[in-house]
Image (cartoon, rainbow, N blue to C red; front, side, top):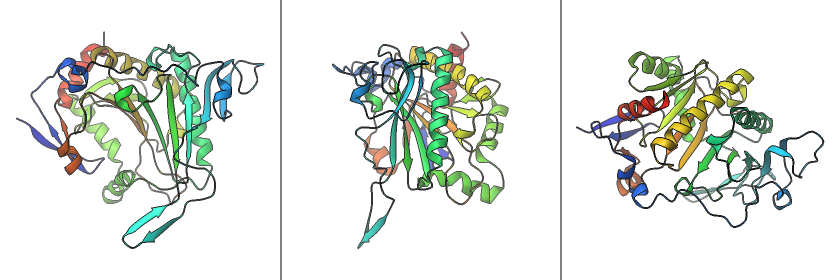
Amino acid sequence: MPELRQDLFKNSWVVIATDVELKPRDFPINRSGGQHVIENSFCPFCEGQEATTPPELACYRQQGTEANTPGWQVRTVPNKYSAFSPEGSFSSQMEGLFTRASGFGQHEVIVETPRHDVEFHELPVEHLELVFKMLRQRYNTLAEDKRMKYLQIYKNRGLFAGASLSHSHSQMVGLPMVPETCQIMSRYYEENHECLMCKVLEEERTQGKRIIWESDHFVILCPYASRYSYETWIVPRRHAEHYGEITDLEISDLAQTVKRLLTTLLDKLENASYNIVFNTAPINVAYQPGHHWNMEITPRLIVTNGIEMGTGYHINPVSPEIAARVIREKIGE
């Protein structure tokens, strides 16, 4: 029988089908032909096309090669089509009932490989480590700008995840305000004097039924109130509020963990589109204890429907217990 589960991290509810195990081909997006690859006749992220992007902000490249030329491994550039502008500062004003604000912010693209034909999960572990080190570097650099209040790292892979280019890349946005959902963990800490994520991790490891994999530094699980089918989280064992605090040893472990999980998901879910989102603590605001950074990996197997848009309550046709079991069986092979 379906049940409603409270999402403690989003302050919402999810409708879970507890006894249905849908196959990849049962989902609407896969039935529509599985067009997860975007075809581009020209790609500005390929090696040799450096002049078509804004000048690089940071780069890992071969010794002796010059900036904005071939010879790079991971490259960060400003988003050429950003909806945000890093000029000036944030301001807002009221117009009767309505509020508008300036579009201040920073939007960057992390090009993860010079090769167009290599997917993120196909990169060697050593190269994935460079990507995660680049994300740490850019996170800590942007955090120095006192105008920034929140940093959002994310990755869109495939047409149904919102990607416009197929070349493997991630993005980072610096925002002048803190999203409302980022306040929930600090409020929990104020009321209970403990970290919500640490408490959830303890409970999940005790129950075990939604745990997929555990490494030395990370735990992979399907969250109790999963909003999406086969949604998975990667949670650091060590309590840390900011992604920028990650150590080199943890990055090495994270690269292996992400590669293992994505390879399994894409194989099991027939090359589905997916999103990756990093949740971290606010920056440059009064200290708010209780945050615990983590990663959400969300396969895009269904589209948002009317009740979800109207109520904000997601409907998930695959329970996290079933999803965890399916992924766990495959990830260990």
